[in-house]
Image (cartoon, rainbow, N blue to C red; front, side, top):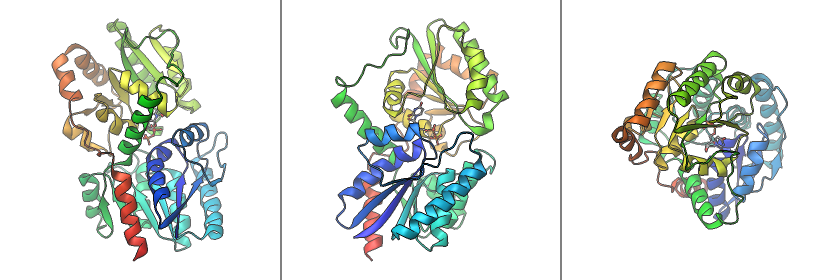
Amino acid sequence: MKKIVVIVGTRPEVIKLAPVYIELKKSKKIKPILINTGQHKEMVDEMLMWFGVKEDFNLKLMEKNQTLESITGKVFEATSKLFKKIKPDLVIVEGDTVTVMAASLAAFYLKIPVAHVEAGLRTGDIYNPFPEEMARRLVSRLTSIHFAPTENAVNNLKKENIKKNVFLTGNTVIDALQITLKKLNEQYKKLPPLIIKNHDFKKYRTILVTMHRRENFGKPHRDIAKTLLKILNTFSNTAVVLPMHMNPKVRSVIVPVLKKHKRAFLIEPPGYVPFVYMMKKSYLILSDSGGVQEEAPALGKPVLVLRTTTERPEGIKAGSAKLVGTDPEKIFKETAKLLNDKKAYLKMSKIKNPYGDGKASGRIVSKLEKIMMN
Ligand code: UDP
């Protein structure tokens, strides 16, 4: 059996690699070993449980007020040590976090091949998103197998002359979403009811908002929060549900602006499963998240993207997402349009999801089996 190490460290990495790990577990040719770097803590543990996946190693690297340089150094050293001990035949990483970049470099130094899931996403601006755009560019140089989620991602890699071992698979986020929706349906009655104090998803049109991007810290976040307040004051049949990111730099700016409005629900991060449920129940989503841009069209929800660039142009091109940045006027105008104009709303919500068919993990694992057995 070949040994494959699967690396996770943050929430989106678990969501997108859990389906791959589940497929690897079924393989008769591969033994997967799951390493959690612990770059994020709470948000990761709950998700591993939901997918029924157990980590083999937890490096517990998260520290209060960690900086980019400290977490990069710690992941690099700790994964390097562990790779020397485990001696894997291959390492799998996903996406564009510090965990991914540092672990890929550690594997490269040991001449262990690396496979990159969700390869080829680019905004074209090395500082936006920061540091993710640079992380994924470097990772494409360090890895030898590239699982690209879309045609556009394949083309981005081609433009950088990366043509060998590039495979179009679809995005595993859709696999994760399908597993979750199925489980939610089966276990719905057993799950604790989704209660947001004083908020009835049926009574108001819920605008679900997430924001955590580093380049929007400070004034951009304040501008968005003020715009949300204006939306609530203009449209009395709306409510804003805003799961707060753990980062205090996000909270300290948003809370003072919105905390007094009775239809603004600033809640603790709800975890993936209730979050999926909230997306299903919401009318419209405003988000700077990458994963949410991919999930929303699969649930038939329009997304206004609170960023000036996106590495996921497929949704914009298809018509299920719009880039509104952090400009208050633009955010207000586009939100108002979706609230007032039923036709415009239906047009955006009826688009076929351009990110995958839920079978990406199967494709990834059968490719890996072929490559590794040769
Ligand atoms: N998500 C979640 N709870 C939340 C907000 C998001 O579980 O309160 C999920 C969401 O469904 C998506 C993923 O987390 O799959 C996105 O993570 P995040 O926005 O942190 O990172 P990004 O996708 O921007 O890298």
